[in-house]
Amino acid sequence: MALLPIIIAPDPRLKVKCDPVENVDDGVRTLMDDMLVTMYAAPGLGLAAPQVGVQKRILVADVSKDENLRDPKCLINPEITWASEELFEYEEGCLSLPDHFAEISRPERVRISYLDRDGKSAKLEADGVLAVCIQHEMDHLDGILFVDYLSKLKRNVILRKLRKLKKQNPEKAVGA
Ligand code: NI
Image 1 (cartoon, rainbow, N blue to C red):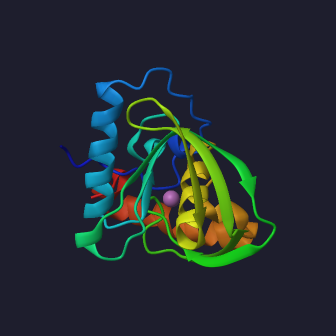
Image 2 (image 1 turned 30 degrees about the vertical axis):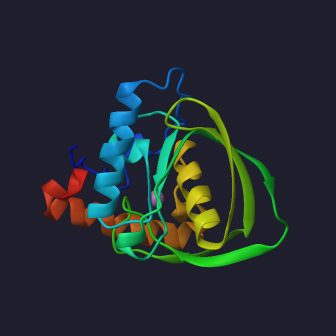
């Protein structure tokens, strides 16, 4: 298993609509294992394939707080089949936008259908932080970052700071 470099915004590779996975093979499973290792090491609650340079509809997430009680989720080609009207506000961060956070509102509960590690159809109902996390990672698969929900002014302030950070620390350009 390998730690993968995480792409830091702004970067055109984070603004791409990703392709569905057609075959869930060993390459996909290895990628998901590497993504989980990378996410835990960061540490983060979720990671989407485009953040490590793979334009495929794959995400991993784990919102368990205790590292002895890990509960990794690996979702391939996820789709939201139902979302609650009630919203949940959460201060979101993102491994591609290090050290920036913002309150974002999203449906509090969602049902998702996806393919599991064996390529089988599966369903998941999530609420609270897990629901937020999966929706955030699913946004990545469509090239959407949480800053896209902020005003242009706030978004530009954050992206300008990240651009400056990358210029000062070139190794940060692909995470460090
Ligand atoms: Ni993110």
